[in-house]
Image (tube, rainbow, N blue to C red; front, side, top):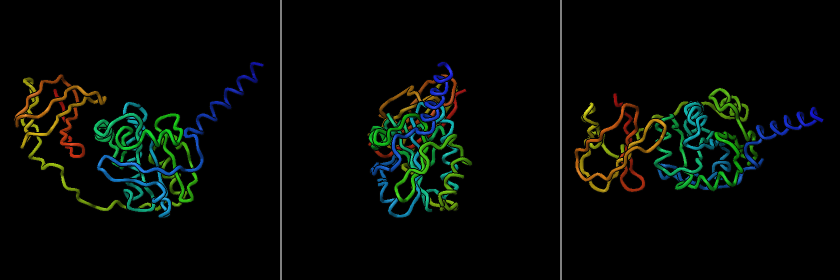
Length: 254
């Protein structure tokens, strides 16, 4: 009896580990990434593209660990300019929280927040059961791999290569800065505080996050020079203007 229960438990674990999404055929969706670009899954598949989706949460340790690995694979296959599309779909966070995650952990591929980009709905459609869950979808809409683990660059590359993915260099492009660098910078950082210089203050909000993604300071910008006292550590400052424009600075306080 005990042996039978043990075998059953092993089978159950195997089933769960190898089926981290609840479907085997891709369901269509349209989502909006942090830059405001729309991504329609079936448009990509109808264009004969492979699609890699990284389902993640911002506070999950393995998600943080493997984000840069997924980015390396994204770059290996041409940064969405070739026949492979990479997309990060979040559960439970807003655009700014996902932007901080991307900056902290090196997620360079397009990402969609759960709360503002439509990510929560896609997670529910696909029955995602753990994070991160990296899946690979073929142009015929079949899910070739519903749980690529571990989601390291080499592991993902092997699966994508076998499915017909073509490695290529990323195109060199220059995207305009949301603000010139001179419009948001640190001009002082010592025991007396961190001094931010923000040109043209107005409809802006400054959010400061700790290395673990926790919001530690938030204030509306009313003047150009802003001094903030912080404990020693690594931080990310996000200057937000409206819903889309943002600029990010990483800095240390000693």
